[in-house]
Structures are given as structure tokens and as C-alpha cells.
Amino acid sequence: GINAEYGGPNPGHIYNNLFSFHIFFFTTKPRMSTDPTTASAAFFGLAGSSSALVFACLGAAYGTARAGVGVASMGVSRPDLVMRSIIPVVMAGVIGIYGLIIAVIIAVTVTAQGYTPFRGFAALGGGLSVGLAGLAAGMSIGIVGDTGVRCVAQQPKLFVGMILILIFAEALALYGLIVALILSVK
Image 1: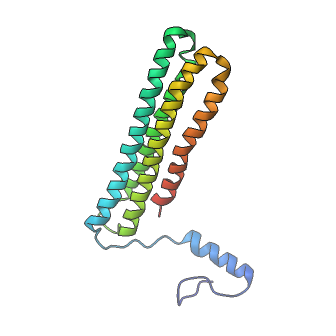
Image 2: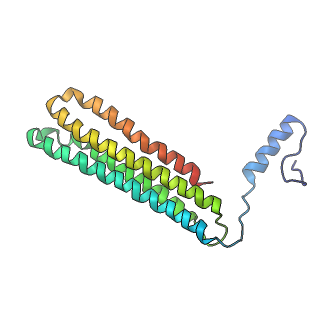
């Protein structure tokens, strides 16, 4: 059962402890504070939301522009490969979506009541993690995409290698997204 003294599981038999742990941690709702949200807590939370979107979109814009220049340049000599070479542009655009997802998740959690400074700092950390990881991934995708599609125009066997490098560059943004999801639910 539940220990009334501190609200946690009672010591006892191991099965009783496991069952009590499950009941305590998976069926109780977190207690929401009715204290008003401080201005600094809301500021840090909303700054995290803004930084997630701004930095991720900067990375997506740079990656899209840089890879798009490579596609346009390559399309002059090999127009038959243009649609195949759009992949870096699409991958760069997806990074902006990562930032949008985290920005919305953070923004809807900032409330007038019960938003603590800890949650504000966690939201700022989450927003910065997805935003700056997206910026780095977008720059990487843009550089690799630009050079990669030009090289594929000259040697089509390089296509698979270019895609693998782009996947590893996109993984950088996914790492930031995972950390931001963990921090935004704290």
C-alpha cells in the first residue's frame, strides 16, 4: 500500500513494493501549484519556445538555400537528375518542423498559474538544444547537399554515399529533438 507518512510505497514484500511503485507513480497526477507564474519563469519558457523555432528555421533556411544552389547549378548540365537531387532540400526543410514542434509544445505549457522557474529553465534548455542542433544540421546538410549533387552529376555512383552523409547530418537535429522532448515535459 501507500505510506501515509510520506506518500510513497510501504516497505514490505518485493511484489508489494513493485505493485505499490506502479500504483503510486503511474496513477497519481502531479500536483499543480496554484501560485502565480513569475515573470522570469514565463520569460525563460517563452524564450525557449522562440529559440527553438528561430534557430531551427535558420538552419533549415541555410540548408535549403545552399543545397538549392547546388541543385540549380547541377540542373544546367544534367536536368534529368534534378528531381533525384532535391533530397537535400527536403531534408533541410524538415529541420524547421522539429523546431516548430518543440516551440508549440513549450508555448502551450506556459500558463499563468503554476509555471515554476525550473520548468522555465528546462524549456529554455530544450528550445536551445533543438534550435542549435537544427542550425548545425542545416549548415551541414546545405554544404554536403550543394557539393554532393554537383558531384553526383559528374559521377552518379556517389549518390548513395551522399545520402548516407545527409542522413548522419540529419541525425544531429534528431538528437536535439529528443533532448528537447525530454526537457519540455519536465
